[in-house]
Structures are given as structure tokens and as C-alpha cells.
Picture 1 (spheres, rainbow, N blue to C red):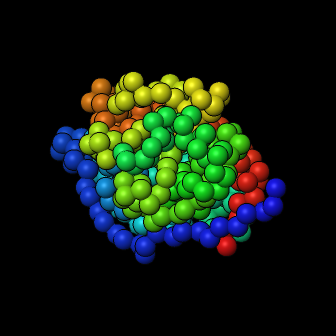
Picture 2: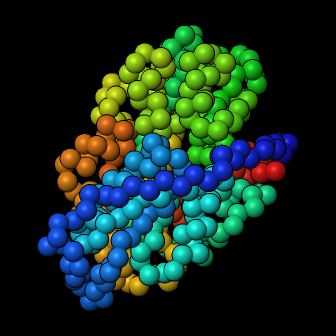
Length: 337
């Protein structure tokens, strides 16, 4: 297959916003950590997010901050440093002192896709400079089209694409994004040709889907759930064969394309060299917090599910997914320019 070239879409310049998680009770201030390598922060900690406030990554970061603050005995701030497909925040986290006070909300794209994208000039070697601490949430993906589009199922869309090779479009939030690779995976699995159109955000892509200026997108449910429930977008299928309680009757892409799965995740990472006690404290705070029914409900309402994994399991998932996405990138001949 001839090599296909795309231009990377960068997000707008860095925007900094800060929010303080619910402050722990006075009795909890300075509460010592426990365990063989006890660690307890002596001042507020922070979680960096590579995307603007209001998105899925921001929601999860604020949820982690809320869970961690009472358990760490200090407030936890959330700082939004949007730009460069999340790599501005990743670089800031990698360059931070490895004292346990700076964490990063690390998504699938930063940790597994961009590092495999030929030609991408990344300021950080995520494998060498960032350490997995805990996974937090699994993001279910859905294939959506505008409510006025003619297709009522994924099978109908695929048949239309086969009848008109290269005429139908799929939207993403930028070259090398999980949405882009999901579309490429669909193209390969179904044996169809689609035209990729990159947007600067899922909300902008959704506007064009609703206006029928774009044909389809596979993206986080949290990005489109409101428009689907409001009747502006039509959910053709879910990318997770396990389904999702937010749309219990939705078909799965695996019904049409056996074995087809597309999900992503968002976890917590820190700079390499963190004290073992800090890794243990953040991981424990995150995993304990995810056990709360109210947290699970909040995630579910935003198209997510708890994905509690400690450092070792999270590292293994990153390695597996990096290999899988790298295969998709190489097969599609995708390059950043």
C-alpha cells in the first residue's frame, strides 16, 4: 500500500487553569502514609492535564484529585496545560522534581500512539521519562453519525463506503489521536477506503457531523453522549464488546466485524525516579477511591468505567497497547509532518 501522509493537528497554545480538590479535614493534614516505604507530602500536590478544562481527561484528573486529597492529607491541584496533543503537560511532568508532588493525567494517545508515529517530534521519551503509577478509567468508544445521515447501522455505513471508495469521511481530533487510529482500524478491518479529516477537538467534529459536513467518527462516549441522547447524533455501534450501561441496547462493532475492539484509557503517571513510597501512596489513594460506588457512577455517566490497575499492571497494558497501535500505524503508512 502506498505511504499515506498526514499533517499533525496541534491544539491551541497552552492554557493554564487550576482547581483545588476538596480540602481534607484538619485532622487529616499531615496524615502519615503507611507501608514499608512510607511517604507523606508536606505541601499541596498537583496533577497536570494536557487538554482544556471540561474534557474527559480534565474530568478524570479532578476525580483523582478529589479521591487523593483526603488520603494524602494535602490538597491536590489540577493544572490544565493544553497544547501539542497533550505533550506540553507531559514534558512539564517529566521535567518536574521526582518528589511525588507532580503527577500527570496520561492518556492512551500520549503513552502508546504518538511515540510510535514516524516523524513526530516529541519533547519527551515517555517510556524513559515517565513512570506509570495507576490506571484510572476505561473510555468506551462509539461510532456516531449525524442524525440526518442515511445509515442506521455500522453495516450500512460499511456497505456505503464499499460502494463509493474514498468518498465517505471519518473525523478525528488530530493525526495520531486514538480517534484517528480507530478510524484506520475500522478501514482495515472492513476493507474500505475512507477519507480522514482532522479537527481541533471532538466538539468541532461533532458540529460537522450534525451538519452532515462529515460522515462518521469513532470517539469517546463522553464526547458525544449528550448529542446522542439529545437526538443530534446517531450511535451506530460501540467499540467495546462488553457494551456500556449508558447505552445498554446499542449494538457492538464486533457484531459486524468479529473481534473488533477499540477503547482507550486514562491513568496517572509521574516523572521517573519517584520514591517507591510516593508511587504506593498515589496508587493506593487512586485504587481505594475507585472502589466508591459514587465514583463509579460518575464515570459511567460520562461514558467511562473504573479501570483500577497498579503500577505493574498499568505498565504492562501500556506496553501491549503501544505494540498494537504501532502495528496499525505501520500498516496504514501514517506519518507526522
